[in-house]
Length: 304
Image 1: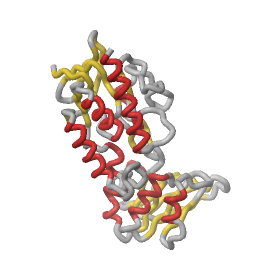
Image 2: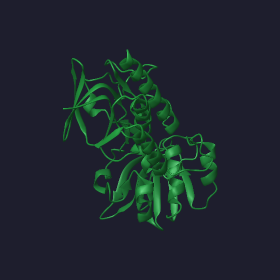
Image 3: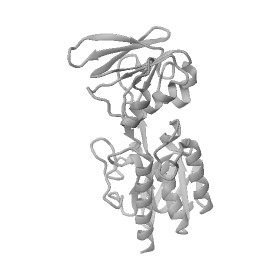
Image 4: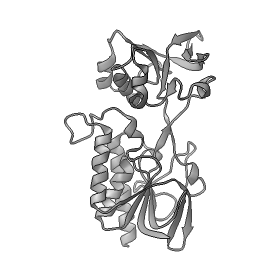
């Protein structure tokens, strides 16, 4: 069995930031990521509010730099899926699809995934008109009318990217107000091919062979209507990737890992960081900070 001082699960900003610190502390560190380094942020277009970068930077470039920095401190990377974690006398055994590993301490940074709407017609058109990633799929909707469900920072940021390709963007907002920051709203409001429909729910995805639009209901009047569109991009929130952690660490009612201010979980020498924990703001800088906190706390535990 391969043995490490620290195993970090998740290769987003929180996980890699933690790895940089544990690696620099000369603790043998393995980072396990099931997909690609970068996590959810890799599907975004640009980052323009990360400290130290006066000009916008692409998330892939930022994460590639973080990965290089971690490797400079001898952090090892494995692309695999962790299925179970079992406590043993001197740490934990992690079983993946392909291997088994032993760790003295663990940092959980598994992040979150976009939520589905659950409305009729959604499953039929997933990947065939319904998507969660404008950066990935935007070019497929060149000169088409698209609908973005959700108008937080993520939704509006992705809408800005889509405007490079699409004919029009309609934002469907279930609240009577728009959550996105003023800086982002200033970039889209007033454009002739952008409109916002407020205080309305998505109730059905309509179409036969191809997606034709979204059926909505006004929450105040109850009036139903269909918004035409050939693509629907969902930005309605996220769910934590903690399915394999049930019974291992304490989770809240929504599935987020419960931590204290040191990012400690209910298990000794097991810490959590990033969007898998219950924090107020889903921002790269916040994830980096929590990853650093988790790493320094675990370093202190292992040194004792």
